[in-house]
Amino acid sequence: MTENDKDPAGGSGREWERRVLTELATASLKERRQARRWGIFFKVLTFVYLILLLALLSDVNWKEAATTGRHTAVVDLKGLIAPGTNAGAKTVIKGLRAAFDSDKTAGVILRINSPGGSPVQARYINAEIGRLKKAHPDIPLYAVIADVGASGAYYVAVAADKIYVDASSLVGSIGVRMDGFGFNQAIDKLGVERRLLTAGDHKALLDPFLPLKQFDKTYVQSLLDDIHGQFIAAVRAGRGQRLKEDQDEDLFSGLIWTGDRAVELGLADATGDADYVAREVIGEETIVDYTKKRDWLERLSEEWASALGRVLGARLFQTHGVAPVY
Image (cartoon, rainbow, N blue to C red; front, side):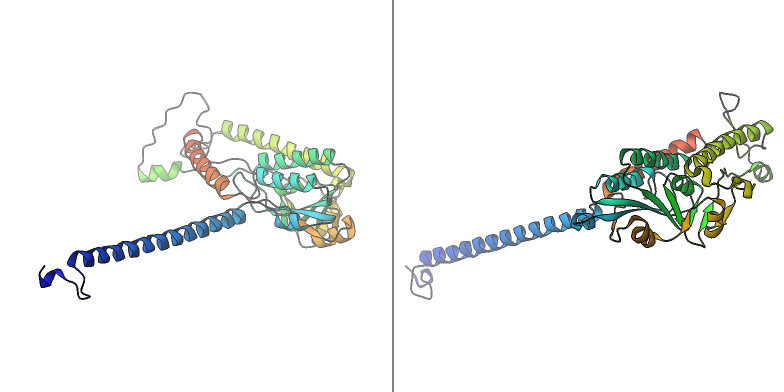
């Protein structure tokens, strides 16, 4: 054994090597254990974060869960009434059903602040309100209009037992519109040649790159008149004898009125906000918000469907480019 075969402590070189290897292995094991503990910690932390995030993005009504007594249920209808929005029929109906299904609900307030939108979506909500009222005859539903409750929003409101407004609310607009543009002169000036092939005499109805045909105008006007008639029928069915049709011949002309004037014409019943209705009309001052929000998965799927619909719509309805709205 040479001097190089001994370690500084006097042991043999091989013993020194074993000792060093053992210490390295022990240190490595400790590091792996520590890394494993931190890995588990961060996995748990990530899991908790995801659970909280999903809870926030879901439509769980924590206020409802915490309520122990009778209350007034509120569902918001805000913004454009259209598929894929928080004012779309699917979302609003979900909130209304939850409100009516609670055995603690003394009355329901549909809180409206919307200029209208899709006739179909508005009809869906109107019809569902009628169904819920029949299924729960002891629970009244009141519409409360804030800044604006016009067109499709008013179509929804007339299904309520009573309509409350502010003196300065904008109410009414009982009419139907369809918007579009004509580019035939523009493409002539630009020297653009339009190539259009159709199968069906009227497949190019309202083509924006062709002059407006009298047949197209007459036909589409008949469609709008038909939808307008459905709107008027819904208003008369909802408001009944409260309407003062003899006081203003423009009642169904598409005009809007202030809340005060709407009450005079029978389009609304009285002035008052949601707090007033809950306290003085329903008799339960405690308000629980049942408004539903679309969760992230629903929003994602609807955005994909909407994008696909726009592509298909551009193909199928490129000659129209428009749709009727309330």
